Each structure stands twice: as structure tokens, then as C-alpha cells.
Image 1 (cartoon, rainbow, N blue to C red):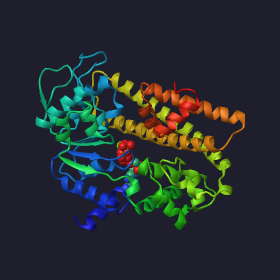
Image 2 (tube, protein in one colour):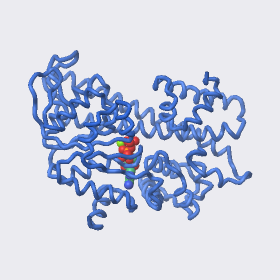
Image 3 (tube, rainbow, N blue to C red):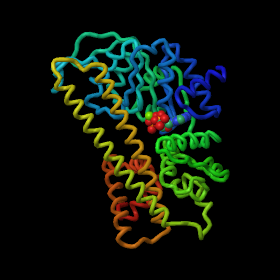
Image 4 (tube, helix red, strand yellow):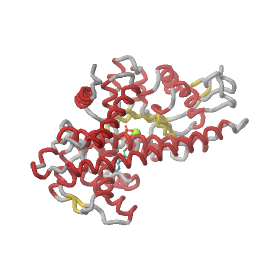
Length: 417
Ligand SMILES: Nc1ncnc2c1ncn2[C@@H]1O[C@H](COP(=O)(O)OP(=O)(O)OP(=O)(O)O)[C@@H](O)[C@H]1O
Ligand SMILES: [Mg+2]
């Protein structure tokens, strides 16, 4: 692939970075675009997987047909088959109309199945069939329907492990993975990290009409040494926080260190502090600001959810018309907004947790404040464990903290028994 072609794709999609692994991923996407081969995009959370299916669709002969992005992890198990493959009126309570499902409405177009590793086994079987011969049977129907849909899927979970644990069909994996696209983690992208910081800082400066923050050379090095567990999404969040919260526009390593989580497993940043410089006041201040942002994000998410709910009710009550593709597309966009807000909240939670760790480990706070923070942290822990059926590993992953940190906290709160 010519460099100029790659550059123009990057420009068109606002993709920043020149590292070899990113170029390779885009190159594969462009080469496979004109075919009907299924593509499986793999990579950690926040690496930018969602850009690839768009590039593939827009550069394929299907570019003028429908494109839908579906987050398989966010659709309840009970409704996913009917969402994907449609249903017949009366086939279950609430099925007041026939519905074509995504495979019906996306005929001739492209479906992006995000978080495909989350699909229930029964849905995997249906998906395999439609991938093999374009055939599917809507829920409650008896005849087979045909569709011509190109599939691009993505996952941030280890599918091989899911296969060995019997949670993902191996035959489906091979069928989806006709062409793999590997998105590199941010920590392996070298100078691209600085370029991305510059992009996000510029976007913030333009959005809020302020001077953009710039990194000193030492700060650039620091940024490149950090492990970025939340990848580009985390870098974006942190750049936005710095842009808004830093009174200095020249960002030094000391300023950066206040915004980057101080978890020793993910960063070496602690070493830049000399004893006298370490400012717990700042850490606490940031913690409060992030909590404040977190609250406003959750509120945004609630608003988005209630709009979504209303839309769904409207669509349901709209008998006897079917859900139109444009309604479906609006709902999909809203779902994706909710999902992206969820990701932001998760990443902020992880920042809160790490900052809180730093405060808890090294500073004895006045009783009242520490009570509030500890209460909050304990509640988050309890909720996360509850949501994950007591599985500590999963709860830690959801909270964005290491297993070790989770165990330490459980012990701290007497919850380790
Ligand atoms: N190379 C890049 N240039 C500019 N922005 C990027 C780049 N890569 C990722 N981003 C931005 O980073 C954010 C996260 O990307 P995206 O949502 O695609 O992650 P993901 O890999 O799908 O993560 P997850 O597995 O958690 O869903 C988005 O806002 C995206 O626009
Ligand atoms: Mg994604």
C-alpha cells in the first residue's frame, strides 16, 4: 500500500499515528475491503478497533449500502437473537410486529459485530449458519430467509481462552477470522503517544477556546514510559482532564504525574517524585474533581438511557408498522453513545481508584473525609463483586484495578473472608 494512500485514509478518519503496527492494521483493512471476507479485529480495550470496520465498509463495493455497528455485549441474552435475526409477530410477549432484525435490514451492506466474544452460544450457532450460506430463520418463523451481509467483528477478550473454556465456538472463530487485524496497544506505539496527546489537546483547545497544553521534553518521555492500560481512550481522557484542570499550559512531568494513575503495576511514575515534591493535596483535589466529573458522566448516561427507553417505547407502540431501518440506526447510535459513556466512566473509575490508592497508602486523612472516600470505595467494591457473581478477578478488571490491589482493599475493609 502506498504511503500517500495510507495518509489520506488517516486524514479522512482523523487517525493519528505512524507506527508500523498501526500502519499494518490499516493496510490490511484497505486490502481486504474490496472482498467479502470476514474480518476479526483484535486488540485491548481502547486501542481504536472501531475505526477499522468503518474504513472497510467505506472502501468496499458495499459503501452505498447500510452499515450497522452492534455491540453484542450490550444486548440482553433474551433479545439478542430477535435483534440480530428478527422475529415474527406473536413469537414472544411484546412481539407485536414482525421485525426484520439487523441481518434483514443490512442486506447487501455491512454489519460490525463489536464485542463478538460476548455472544451467547445459541446465537453463535445462528451466526455460523448465516456466515456459511447466508441463511437464517427469524425467531418464531418456520421458513429460512436469505441475506447478503459482510461481517466485520471485534473483540478485546482472548477468544482462544474463551474457546478452551467452552464459551466460544471454534468453528465460528475460524469463520469470523478469515482475515485478522491486530490493533497494537498504545504502550507499543512510541512517539505516536505524543502525537495523540497533541491531537486531543488541540481538539480541547478548539472546543473550549483556550490555549492548548503542550508537553515539555521530559514530560513526553514520561508519557511514552507509561503502560496505558486503557490505551488511546485513557490517553484521551487524561489529556482532556489536563486541558481543563491544569492552570499551567506547559506540562511538566510533575504536572503529568498528578493526572496519571499511580499504580505501581502500571507505571514507573512514582520514581519521579522526590520526597519533598509529592503533593497529596493535589492528588486529593484531583480525586474530588474526577469524582465530580464521574457524577456528571453518570447523569449524562442516565439522560441518554431515558431517551433510549422512550424511543424504544415509541417504536413498540408504533403498531402495526415495523421498526424502520432509520429508527434502528438511531437506536444503534444512541446505544453506542451510552456504551462510550460507560467506557469513559469505567476509565475514570480506574483513575479514581488509583488516585485513591495513592492517597490511602501514603497519607492518613482527617477522619471525616477518609470515611467518605472509604465508604465510596467499599461500595464500589461490593457492587462490582455483586455484578460479577463474587468473581474477584472480573471485579478487579471492571474496576480497572489490579487483582493485588483488589485483595489489599478487601483486606482493608475486612471483606476478605
Ligand atoms: N489512532 C487514533 N487516532 C485518533 N483517535 C484514536 C485513535 N485510536 C483510537 N482513537 C480514539 O480512542 C477512543 C477509543 O477507541 P475505540 O472506541 O475504537 O476503542 P476500542 O478498541 O473499540 O475499545 P473497546 O474494546 O473498549 O471497545 C475513541 O475515541 C477513538 O476515536
Ligand atoms: Mg469498542
